[in-house]
Image 1 (cartoon, rainbow, N blue to C red):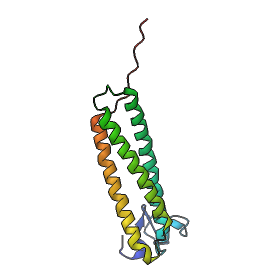
Image 2: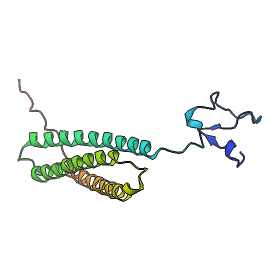
Image 3: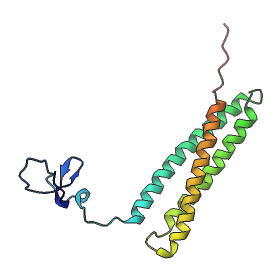
Image 4: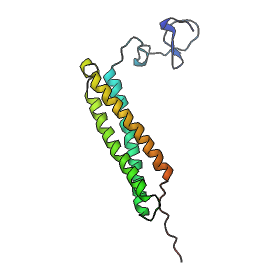
Length: 155
């Protein structure tokens, strides 16, 4: 494989047409995934990244809501009832804050240099909060949320 820009491989396919060395080339070289010289739209990239983070945040939010329900069904007799209620509530609150931050991150134009400092602060804050959420959820898992067992019917 040569070092010229037209012979680099993407997904196992070379971008050069008619190179004669038997490499598989896609039939549609003009396809959008092969445009190497195209500049990346940072707003589009950031919006996709924020959408993916939001989907993960929603999944964790649903898991925490389910855990909260399981702990509440077990009642105060469960040994770690209060610590789990507090930890799950902290996790849920932080996830809502991160969700709001992600909405603001998507709202701003990355191509405007005047907004870069503000976006950097918001992005760092969101990253820090996500780290805290992960640590809190590790403790939630360590305390163990079990679904209450159904009482056996005697008959």
